[in-house]
Image (cartoon, rainbow, N blue to C red; front, side, top):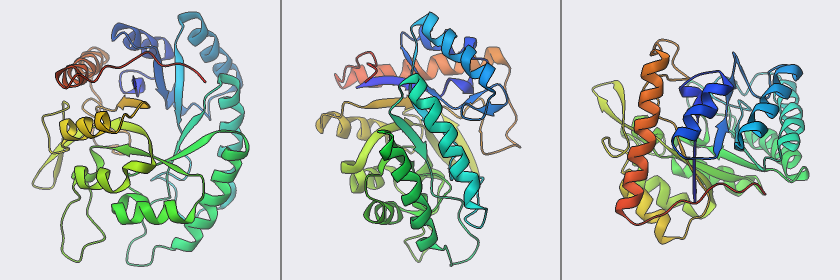
Length: 293
């Protein structure tokens, strides 16, 4: 098991992302935004600079947090948008020797019709392209079809051969359970136990609801049952990545959330990482450095 994180929650500057990663004693970043764009959308010149700075500092990218089929994309959008993102992503992942890519299953549709068959068709094409390039596509339970419940996630697994999962601990806390007739939220531990055999990567996020307000907090302070999930991971001898995504200084899918200062974001990220390491130490679950495959 190794530790990593979405260091763009500190800064969009790659040098700052590397600095905060090294201060935590880690050697990997889960790449998402650099500058004003996702890593698969930055210019070739900027990408070459990112590669050089990473190499110079001995820092790896363990996973691409792509925007492919994410919550900002509708199932009615032209499929070519996703296919172009896939091609750019594959090229850059191969350059950096990255084997994991986060994808999603398009935004939820209003109403009951979710066009599941079209989602399955598109995701199968997407996943086949990654698998042909010897890259493992990981679906994240977020504001998408698979994130509607653990049952929806397993439906994706059953219809898309080769796709694996990245499980986000905090998203169930703030997400409606669409598999139930009553209006209730999902349970993070229940969700994890139902899908754990398909999990290849973990995102650590914690939250609670104050009425309708989503409140993101340090790991172990919310309702995501993170300690219980970490114990489950240890019990199953999980040896993949555990990636922090605090959402306390910035929320990437909420433009109204505002942004903290660099100094505050940096401080939060360091504290978040240290608290996660403390939780792991308390259960004698010891991380190792990330090793590129």
